[in-house]
Image (cartoon, rainbow, N blue to C red; front, side, top):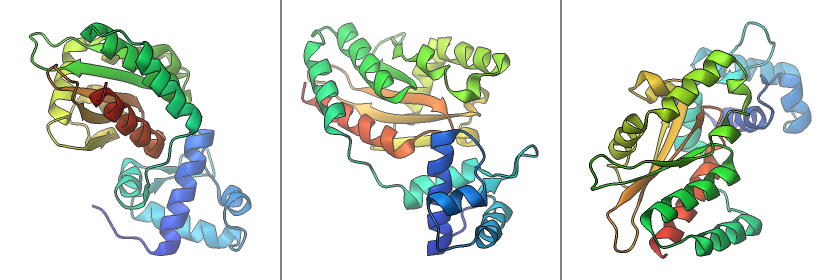
Length: 243
């Protein structure tokens, strides 16, 4: 259940998620005080973080004094706090120049766009054009994604690789998630499939001139830079539509 937050708790949740995405380490009150909230004492922040944990937006790993966001905390952030970032001039230039270099064949377009996105995000990028049986799947970025701390455990890495190798599953997943217009973000246990219960999947429709519509997806750990992903996915989708 989503519980509305007051302004201070919203800012604390936003700061904690930002810090956690950056560091991949549980975030403590002292760290937040030094980085974001010098006007508050660590004790004040601890009390607020304890309340955020009580309502289900944070969790407290047993081996650490810090806290991490839950799937519900990320959902509140995405729906009520996140603002789409402006992508950098460097990223715009890389995307535009990269798309210009892509050939005009369907396979070249989708493979090329997947490589551009995955190189900028360090997550797996997946493109699926519709209207084919079976649906072809174009993907890139597996090696970069496996460098994320979440996959340092061999079992987690193996499960992730097995999921990304299931092309029929990926095609079905993207087709289902792309039914809604706009950007669709599915976080952790919001995903109905066991293969993606510990992952986040961000999907947008993609319309290329003269071709059947398709879907663009980004797959990675729930500790995802959602605003950056949303910005780049929207921009690449718009550029491809004008391609």
